[in-house]
Image 1: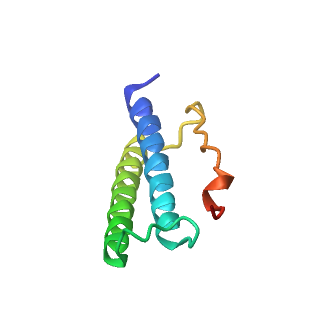
Image 2: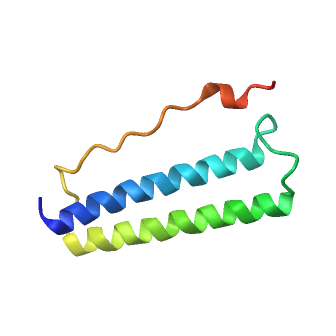
Length: 92
């Protein structure tokens, strides 16, 4: 596999991981069943902003590499999304 194709594939995986982390952070800040009362709203906003900034940084890296490559590789490894833990939103 071409090294640039490998970089694009790796950057895509990192971007997906950052996207999932951002989604989880937003969920934990907004879900009444999952939200921690020990974390202030200001801290939650800060955590959400940091997660979003990281997601966007990873997206830009992926997009830059993709632009450099000039096409979306068809033979890239399949990126699997993790299973959702349905119990995470259930009240105790």
